[in-house]
Amino acid sequence: MQGLLSVALAAAGLQGLQPPLPVERPFVPQGRPLEGLAITIDPGHGGASHAAGYTGSARGVESRYPEQDLNLKVSVHLVNLLRMAGADVRLTRTDDGRMTLNPLEGPPTSRSEELGARVKMAAESASHLFLAVHHNSFSSPQAHGVVVLIWPTDKEGRDQPLERAFADVLREEVEAAVPHGRRFNHYLSQHPLVTFSDQPSAVIEFGFLSNPEFDRWVTTPGNTRREAVAVYKAIERFWRERRADLEAERARLFPASALFGRAPEPTPAEALRRDLLGEGAPSERGLAEALARYAELVRRSGGWLDARVSRENGRLAVEGVCSHPRIAAFARSLAPSGADVRLGVLAPGRPMVGAWPMAAVWRNPAIASGQVDQVLLGETVWVRGAATDGSFLLVQTPRGTFGWLRRDALEEPDDRWSAASRRVRFLADALVDDFRIPAGAELPLLREEENSAIVALPRGVRATALRKEATVPRDVVAPSPSEGLRRLAEGAAAAALRYQGSPLLPAGRTEFGMGAAELASLAWASQGVRLPAAIDALARCGAPSPTEGELPLGSILVFLGETGLPETVGIGLGGRRFLIAAPPEVQVCSLDPQDPVYDGGLAESLAAVRALP
Image (cartoon, rainbow, N blue to C red; front, side, top):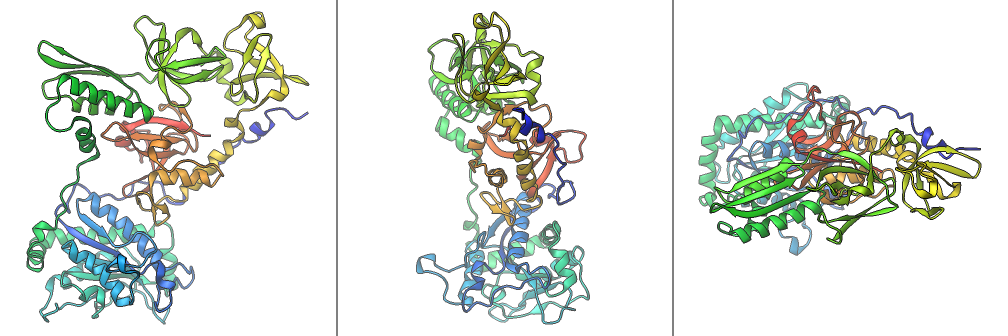
């Protein structure tokens, strides 16, 4: 007879995951060398390139990869690098739509109008530079090299030395990174992209997709990243060498350019602080209300904050505990200068299991103080603290909820609970005399008989003559989903890895730009499991897993921002490695300080690991 665990045991031999790119730290700018630069980046062509009357973009002679997609991928990666370096960047498109001068008037009526709409964005923002990103094509497959298109005179016929110099630097830096043949002179053309505006403009053509060698190179994973880095280096060098000239040219072309700069947007922490406190220094009551509102936000996101405000010797005092140092830091920032703030951080916790058929989890360490969750028989919770008298324990439940549970509702797990591969879940209630095991309970399977299963209990009860086991009908239990679905977790991790090297694009869902929450959602969707594509919702998916141990495959790692609330998520790859969409790209990182891809900032901000399914 086939055992209950046959499916689960068949999933035990997981194969190693193979990233498509070498696992290494991606190139990132050092410091903010582009502070003050305003630039517009235009990914050439667009999704309407197949429409009637539009010539469209080139395609790889062998790969058949569309140029418009390569242009977008390089551009989004480049924009990440520029922004990390401090530049104010406009990106003309992030999707497959054509540009138009006035969206209210419908789509553009001509190619010239569409190209003009792209340049108009640069003029409206008084950009120092405009750069269109393209790949080339020619009738001869032997054409091989980097081409920069410019028109080095302005509308009045005056020479534009900055445009010539920009083209020189672009060609030099790109040729150092991209395979090419002979050096091409700059292509002088009255193309709308470089003539609609007099600001320094250029079109970079990285190489010829009609050349088989270049086509194979550019469609190899990781090489569009090389193109983006080369252009970044060119822009950073040009700004360093010619900043004064660029500032003077911008002031000449746009006399009111000082008004064009966007006012600095408040950081998420500044915006939340303003929302909680309003204007001015808070009173004792105002601070207490702000901390209470903030504590509720923290709890809804899977964290914990318990803070009390008082006045001691004439000054405000805040005392309490929270679940992460970043929560403590933001709560501390709400208090006025001179306040005495004492906020401790909870220990990682220890596991205990539910010993009652069902036990209420309360908002405060008192019965009937507002139920926030319920723990079933055999469920594992993480104990994070205790009430002063020890009668209640502060726990984190499998749903990630923090709350207070009576101490006598829990039991220390013994060795039977460490044998995770032998868990079963109850499909329906089962009665052992008058002791009820509720549907949804998950208990260790000790052994099987023809029509029954013997499961472990956290503690002995009268109905079992105080023995820590119970015999139940076999048809009311099934292998725990966490066992039978292991291969789904491996499949989700493998699906996520396919996006390694894709540029970060908040809310993006393709290889041309990928968001953090979207990466996790798409990875699990590939296995037929629908997860929300929102960071705050993903932070509550799955069950808590230790942050110090091995990261389960496909698990959701939750990282906090300066607000102490979830800011981004990653996907566990096993060991201490994970995948995350973070500037500038989807990348493999590690929590192990000895690993070359260790990221100390992410390690410090890790708040939770949520095991799925």
